[in-house]
Image 1 (cartoon, rainbow, N blue to C red):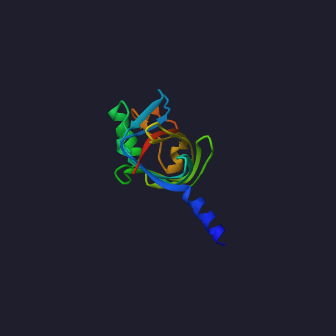
Image 2: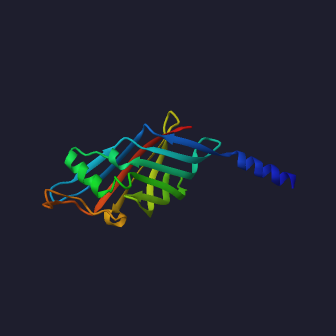
Image 3: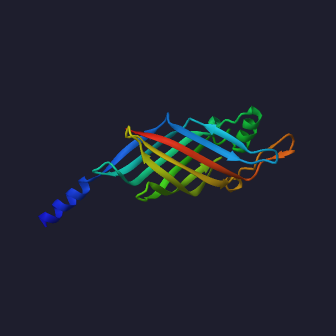
Length: 184
C-alpha cells in the first residue's frame, strides 16, 4: 500500500497545472466576403487565461481551462463606415463582448488542440469546436493559433449590408486567432 501511494505521488508530481495569461500578444481577425470584395476586421486587444498541464520536461500534455474575451468594438477594418455597420449587426450597444470559454480539450503529441467550448457573439452563446496548434517558444511563452468558420445567422447576426443594400456581406465568416501566453 505504501508503494502504491509513493507511485501515485511521483506520477502526480511529474505533471503540473501551470497558468498562463495573454493581454498584449493577442491577434484576432474576422474575415468574410461581400458582393463587392472580401473584407477583414482585426484586433490586437483582448484578454485570455489558460491552464496547461505540463510534464516534468516542460512539455504540454493537456489543457484544462481557457477563457478569452474582447470587446467587439475593438475589431477594426480599413473603413469606419463598415465598422459602424458591423457593430450595429453585432449588437454592441446591448452585448459588447465576444467570448470563448473552454469546456473540454484534447491535445495531440504534435501540439494540435481540439477544443470544445462556448462561443458568445452578439449576446448569443453556442457550442463551438475549435482546432488550434500550440507551440512552446524559446522564451517559454506559449502560442496558440487557429481559426473557426462560423455562420453569422447562427448567432442571430444579420449579415450587414452597405450602400442601402447594394452591397451585401456573406453569411459565413472566419475567426482567426494567434495568441501568445506568458506564465503568470
